[in-house]
Length: 383
Image 1 (cartoon, helix red, strand yellow):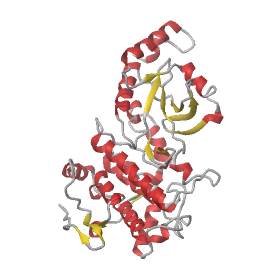
Image 2 (cartoon, helix red, strand yellow; image 1 turned 90 degrees about the vertical axis):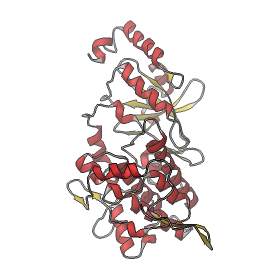
Image 3 (cartoon, helix red, strand yellow; image 1 turned 135 degrees about the horizontal axis):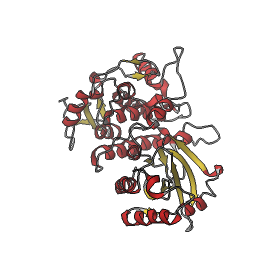
Image 4 (cartoon, rainbow, N blue to C red; image 1 turned 45 degrees about the vertical axis):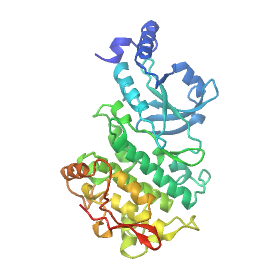
C-alpha cells in the first residue's frame, strides 16, 4: 500500500496528514528533532533560490535559519524517496546515531505529506568543491597544512563509516562536493547513509554515474560491484584533487587528454610527480606531498583487493612512513564507454577485507615508519 493511499494528497485530508505527523513523533527518538514543513519553509524564505547552496542526486540543499537563530543546512530530498513514515524514520534514526567529528551531523527531519526533508548542521566554509575547485571568486586559499589536514580528516571519517559505524556504511559517492568544511576548515563527510532512503531501481545511481565519472571505481561503474574498495578508489581521486587544485570530473590533462589518475601515473613514470602540485601552493614539504600522491595511487589501483583499507590509508597519511612501492600497480580508469586496466571481481575484495578487519598491527603497504631522521621501526612485511 502506498504512502498516498494511507495519508491522502497534500492539499486535502489535513487531519490524516496530522495523524502522520503524530505517528512520526511517536517513532522519532531523542536523537532526531522533528520539524514542521512550515517551520522549514520559513527558515529558508519559502525555499528561495538565493538560499540554495547545493544539490545532487539526492535533492537540493538550502541554507536556513531556525527561529532560535541557529543556521542549518536543509536538504529537500528528491521525489524518488517515497518511503512510508515508519521506514523513512527508521533509516533517519540509524543515520542520526552515527556521530563522529569528521561526519556532518544530522539534526532532524520533516515527514509531512509527501515531503522528505533532512536538517543538518551548517558548515561555514561550504564544500571542498567550492572552496578549492570552484570559481575564482569563491575559492579559498588553502595552504599545505590545511590540505593535509583535510585529507587526513576525511580519511578518518570514511574509515569510521567503514569499520566503526553500526551498521558499517559504504558511502557510494565520495567526492569534493560531499566534503564540507567548518569554520576551522576541518572536513566533514556529508550524504552518508542516504542511499537506503531510495529504492534500488531509482535513477539516482545512474545520475551520479553521469555526474561524477572522474571518481568512479571501474568495477562499480561497469559491473555494479559496490564494496568499501569503491569508496577507497574515490578517496584516492579526492587526494589528487586536493593536491593539484583541479577537478577530476571537469578537467583533462596533457596532449592525450588524460583523466587525473592517468595523468598522475604518467608523471610518476616520468619521474615528475611534483608537477601535479597546485601552482597556488608555493611552499610545501616535498617528501610529504610525494607520499600523499603515492597513497592516492595505492587507492586507485585497478584491482579492488590491491587497494588499502581506509584505516591503512589514515596510517599512511598521518605517519612519516616509507611506502612499499613494489606493491603499486597501474590505476584503473572508467570512461563513459570504456574502462582501462579493470581489475578482478569482488570475490578478491571480500577475502581482502576479511584479512584487514580489526586493529591493524601490520600494514603491507608500508615498508618502514620514520620515527626520526636516524630511527626506523622494524620493516612491515606484506601478508
